[in-house]
Image (cartoon, rainbow, N blue to C red; front, side, top):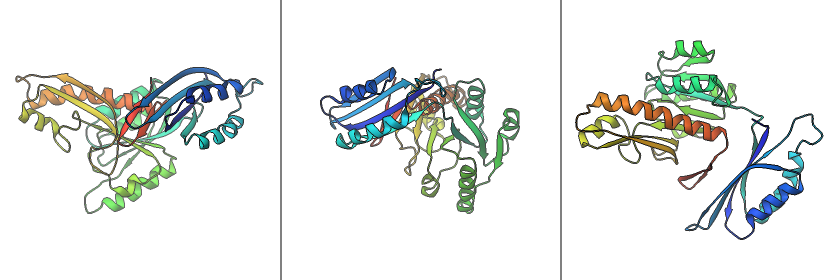
Length: 287
């Protein structure tokens, strides 16, 4: 992939926004690779993602990001823009949290090693030891941090120490079966979770059992950002599969695991590629 920069924008909608941004990029010599935008007519908000080529680091024709930021900042203030500028030259450090169920963490590690997820994974944290051998196979540091209700404050303090030591900017809860407190969620990183149901249906623990008791004909999985409200954060991706009265709980679990892998890996990849804008309790996912 070419070295590129991504600009994410959200602001009040008005005429000429696309022209203003693209013209400034053109004036600075940008070769735009992708551009996408969305308008929320109900709220009067505008969202945009634009990606352009940076060029080689030692090339005379390399795009000057610092000069562009200096020129863009006054425009952003004038147009009341919230904005993020990122490049794919810096690999985001990611920590994986899991418990005893390993299908999601194994899938993420495989995708990472094969190059599908462009990031660094310096750390795996678990409240069980089942993942230790898998972490060793991939050469990732493993830390066992047991958690009970009585020890949660101390355990989360240790987890935050580990995140800080490794410069983690994204925490992926790959079937980590403990509720995070508001304290750890204030750590300066994004937290992505996978929930084994089609939210908002069947929140909390044992959703497959609840779905079986209810006799639903579709089950699903949801990836979402984590907030202080359980299973209520902005949804990133969802998928479903059809079931029937013949399926038992173990059948739902087996089918659901495939969905969990898919929706979680998509969410992580889109986050790494700067394709997600959060607003309110919703997300815009750019193509």
